[in-house]
Each structure stands twice: as C-alpha cells, then as structure tokens.
Image 1 (tube, helix red, strand yellow):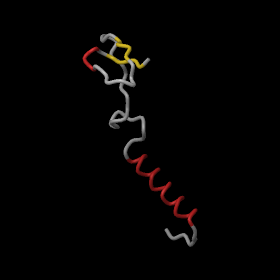
Image 2 (image 1 turned 30 degrees about the vertical axis):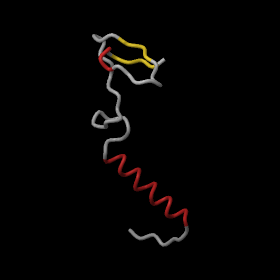
Image 3 (image 1 turned 30 degrees about the horizontal axis):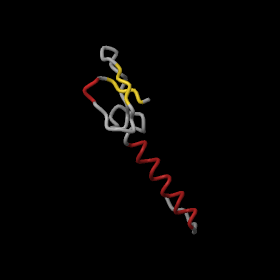
Length: 66
C-alpha cells in the first residue's frame, strides 16, 4: 500500500494506526493475558479496606482502596 502525503498530521496518524494494531494484536486492554487486566475478586477471601496512598499489605486478602 502506498499513500502519498506530507506533514506532521500524517506522521501522527501513522503512529496511531500502528499503536492500534499493536493493542489489537496483544488482545486489547481488557484481556486476561494482559498484566494490566484485573481478575474477578475471589468471593472466598475477605476484603481489606486500605489507604492506597500508603504501602499496601497484600496478606490481608482482597484490597479495596478508601
């Protein structure tokens, strides 16, 4: 494919298309294979409300920020 154009807008558009292709290839933002995907909370674990601006104690179960 060849498109003849010039300018900064074309470069930005090209980068945006490449980024969209990479995201689609990796399964998107909300995919279980994506490390940024938050899995469902385990109902058998208790929920610990913690101040998330401070270090978290992960041993207390599921964390809910307050």
